Image (cartoon, rainbow, N blue to C red; front, side):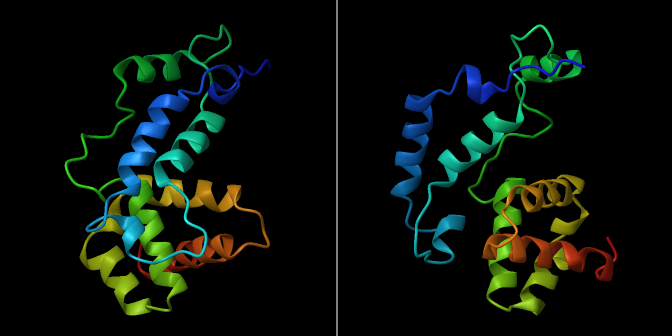
Length: 156
């Protein structure tokens, strides 16, 4: 099987990513990145763009799967328009990792069970994908694995 080039190898819209990262930098209230002060702040917009571009095939490549090309044309990838910051699956995975890291088990349980976040299959799929991407010696890997370890015990 011949694999298509990844989007990051072909086209990464740096100006557009920078604009989103700049806008995100000045959000002071109500954004997931303000929940916890990190020692090394990373732009979530830039991180999302790089992760997606590294994982997604180039839709213009002849070896790109037809199903992916169809989804790229629809341009929503199954997501609805996000009306509030913090509503994306990535924001929710990140928030659950922060709750786990802070040792807030009850808050994590309320977030996943009572708020219904754990009922979204995209949440668990993304958490699993991120866990596979983090190097094994990092705190982020431990936090992601900690959230995933709660899945069965919470009935998901």
